[in-house]
Length: 472
Image 1 (spheres, rainbow, N blue to C red):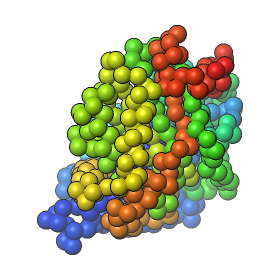
Image 2: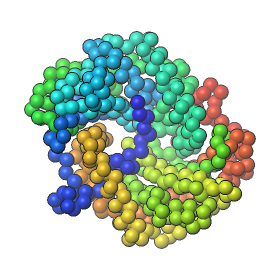
Image 3: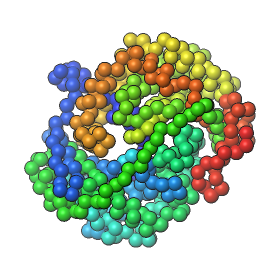
Image 4: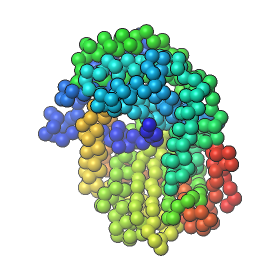
């Protein structure tokens, strides 16, 4: 299983046109049509007969954002449970009818949605749709305490491997802890807190399924070598009798407000300290998300990027610099993190980073920087078009979050219109003085934090729950 944060910066928020020689009029086009069943299930059909393969990509509009304080990790846990078999599909059948015939299958969870997909030879489209319909309609017929406990242990172990025992593995949790109030749906991690996973019961999971895993909360993209008329017949046959779910009340997410810089220090089993900055930005549907994507490309990445050039190559004070805008469905944050080279402190790196940002806010980007940033984002998007799954994800993203599978064209037009003045404006609007600064330092060395005298120590709650503030 894949555990994804809601970083759509490389896949969807950066939609640039394909090269002129590849598409007439220098525009990307994914031919598709849609259908909707009476139970609310939306189907996106995008035939492409280039190779004899087909992808079924199912998105449920539910992620960690839909959980509650003290009951975190359910969306991701359910991703695992969905692979344990269903009413008419015994455990193991899913793999035999995908991997066993040369295909693949997997799933992923982020803050805003949960995804399941199969890549199979074209003649296995019907079996893929049958399996997805069975776990959509009949998963609870085979879910018992034993299966649930086994998957809960797997998820707990995944947290240990990817977060608790991973160097800097808690970094983004700490950033969100500093950025969002405890009750904000984006404040907790997708994988959940260990204490919450321990408290989860099979009845909790069943209730979660009944509310969110319904046709009316799902979208299916079918992409690849298939005949639309036949695919529609399969969809009606296997999904038509499933009942629509109850009306879902989506959580209200209010953007956090930082009235001053918040400084946090966390001691971890690392050899080298690392510095993280985060500013409040906007969600995916806000027009400022596009210049923020370009801003991230200009600040960090290639050798000539502003921060990379200044800190890694010119001053040689940093080993690496990374920047991205994390645009969730309902809120966002801009992140920069810097790893120092020997004999360079986090305090000095913060000052160096700020000097580069100050100059950028004053001068804005050059024409060459704009061209390079857009070209890099274009390459990422066009690369995604090489696979049926990539196209399915683009179409599903538009349908689920914007109500339009063809939304990528609007994103393309919006991004094409971004100017250097727009990028300079968002740098000044969002990357100001008020931010979260997280210093991750080796155990028992809090003095290595940036401006350690002003930083607040953060520790893990004794029960493995969320984080708690310590003494300065």
